Image (cartoon, rainbow, N blue to C red):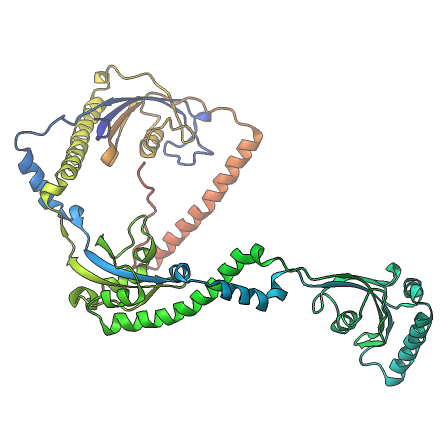
Length: 486
């Protein structure tokens, strides 16, 4: 019975206010905290079973609350899905096709050739006067002539004569690079035009000036063997062919479901698709739904007038990347009240909960009235514990707030709180205890919080004053700021 509403009976004791000046209804827990003692004792007021007219009572409750027991609009549907992954799995790739694909793409399948080179640069800006560029060219030609006589002096000459400040200290070394990647195109072309390491190019002109290039090392291209690459090649080739087939099949799919709108079978047979079925499909995706039935767009099409009333196929709907679907409604069930026999257990639980809440409320209000009038009759209450806004002892927030708002000048005091489905709570407040001594840091934080709350409250008061003074009215209701019951 612990799941049903109940009457909560609490004994609470409150402490003296600090300085004796704290307002009785202070709500700022940080600055004006009152501590209370409370302990819970529960008396259940819900009977174990209903009377002999239970069925009549339940049916009356069911009739009065049919909106709670509505079955949503639903449909039994058939649908087909065309997706790229399924097409890809069905694609057959021959050995001959794989070999041809390997030969055609060998250059991109492995590591391309890389070369290492050094250079000597004599700078001449692209837009420099012709005489200046000519002077730079002649200087570079003189250096090239010296290298023709002594090729092994390239590194030393680069260190002393090259005007490329980045590479000159390293003998002009440019590191490894590919033919068309990682280097100025003019240097790359010259480097890959040399036959073997040690060869020196002719004068190379670029936007930076004039270069002399020397090939120092070659890393040949490396293409893995066909057998090693076979799984990768097969996957790539199958993906390419599947993409092409998917485009053709998608067009046939789209046209077919439209032209033969009374059945999905012709399109399914033509494209070798499986006609799937589902029952109790609703306008919104069900929890855990996957694929087409998780697509709001597809479900919306299924519940269109054409699909529901005329039982026509939906258009081809994109339900995911490279995935389209079409469906049709086999049977349609409008929203309706579920039969009493189907929901009897739910009805009984709701009825007992509501009756229990009402009984708890009646009993609680009676006890509250009686104890308030004659406090001495409140006997056998449990021992007290501390309650505070930052130490609720697991009690509902509404109850804690009511206890903290009790008038400390009229103790002991009884408070009652309707907790709705949780029942009704009655608490006795005995006394107020001194607040605990807090550190300077906590006091400062509390004061800052108080000021933070005070400013909007002050603004709100001024706003209400202006409304009253100028007789202003807001026609649209403000959103509710009431905290949810706990």
